[in-house]
Image 1 (cartoon, rainbow, N blue to C red):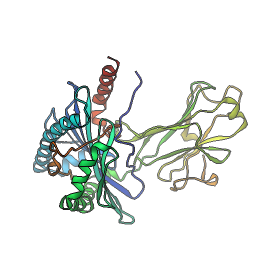
Image 2 (cartoon, rainbow, N blue to C red):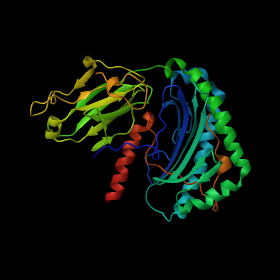
Image 3 (cartoon, rainbow, N blue to C red):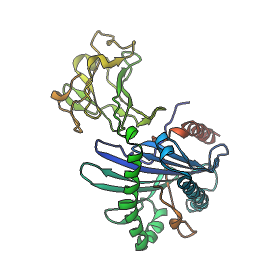
Image 4 (cartoon, rainbow, N blue to C red):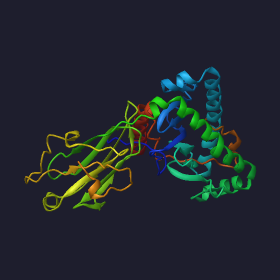
Length: 369
């Protein structure tokens, strides 16, 4: 079975130099017996720092710095938030099954929310996305101070929440003030870990001369990385597939980009993979290739990996060298659906990767049955 990696919605909030994020992911699942009905994962700069699920019924720290910084009162309050949210989501998922006329099978409900802070400019930002069964349902536009829904089933919910100005102001205060305060507090707790910089290990991988070439970066922290391809010193994005940002067990990240080019094109042109992370300059000795690909079948040299020396989004040829939010005030009734979506559990959910793989297998068996 092909491994499928889950991530939330269509976007991932990457942490760039100077920008920090606090993010919570709430996930509810129905129709699967050996998977927790409800989970909460909290992440600071994409590093998981807390976890709750409906099986253990307890919020627990996932980093040593969090374990040492907060006491029993904090974890008791997080546990109560998790227990209350679990009951709320159980009701919501039943309502959404009726709203979407999907009473049987496996269903998922998810919400992702949090905030970002740029410690260089002081700029802040909040975000909240909700969905159901892999489809965006409603999201909060903080600049416009309104809820937006891309589906008919969400119009009523968005309308009702938009008419509740007090709730909107409460949300604005949370994202602009409360969330930012907790983010700064967590950053202080984990400054020795969160402010570290680990450079990526970059490899070119190819099974044979006619196979796609993969530029693979792994072991880097923080998560913000750019992998791009160039053809004859010009940006090239044709026949390129960029993979998702994935977590490693040690808290670092990995990402890959694959290009499909014929051996004839390799021979006639110069292709290079450009990897950018925190301004790191890689040397030739740091670039690895798999033994099967020291050169192409026709003797042409392999594609070179060229990390950037600047922190800009794009690199020029000269630069190439080698606090959880309580959700009870948004409880759904039969007239008010909290509709959530999942295209994947966020990249930082290392603790539940094994369970997610089980979920994928079970989903596949349900579909094939």
